[in-house]
Image (cartoon, rainbow, N blue to C red; front, side, top):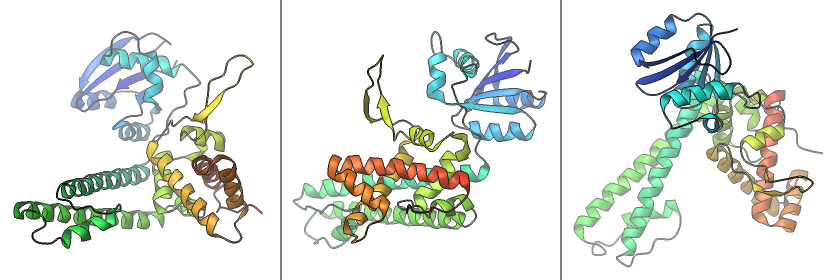
Length: 336
């Protein structure tokens, strides 16, 4: 039987559990980073188990290049196999137990290019969060001086720049000027990352094909490639939608079947982007004199169930279109 090694990853300490028989740990070791690297160099081709967490994809790429088999398991599913208190030893043992469940599908190891796309999106999202926090702080502080700035990120900086000299105390004006400069710098960084993403799209055929789908633009296409990776890991388009949390949550028993709202499982960032894209498609559908069949369907759902339900239903369809386009390696073909 192939040697199986479960590793609980950390920044500087690695818990290693070796198993040669299902359900039994033959050896448990706690290694520093340098010891762990020497340990890997001594191993014959083996089967390594990691949780799909920070640095897992790096170690996965490294081990696959050395001829090992690597399985990354979803952390939230591994958690259910932990017995007793949470320790590094019980986490490593839980990996071995979860690996025996064929229903738990592994996460594919991301390539360096996919990791690059995901990292750029992470930085961009962080910049946007910080910019939003600064803008909200400016709006809240000025409200204390009777100055109300209309909603909209682009209206805040001009409003601060054109403030009357006597509207707020001088020390606060200096501080606000610094915050405005920070907002401008953050916006420049966001634009810079978007330029980098646009350049990377030209080198990524799958992303170019995803751009042909209505409601999927530069940000959503590159995020899908970077975070989903190989679309063929999903058996069908519905499995991708379920992974993104865009299908109904089910709570059934016996002959009674109950379907609720969407499960909201999976990657929140991807789900948000798809819903924003669907909302854009729905808005433009209402303005067109001759909407496409997809837009007509979305408008009919909106009339029956309301805008929010129609938006999420359309986002579900966009995710399914993305699976078809990516797995069949072709551009999107609108319905007749």
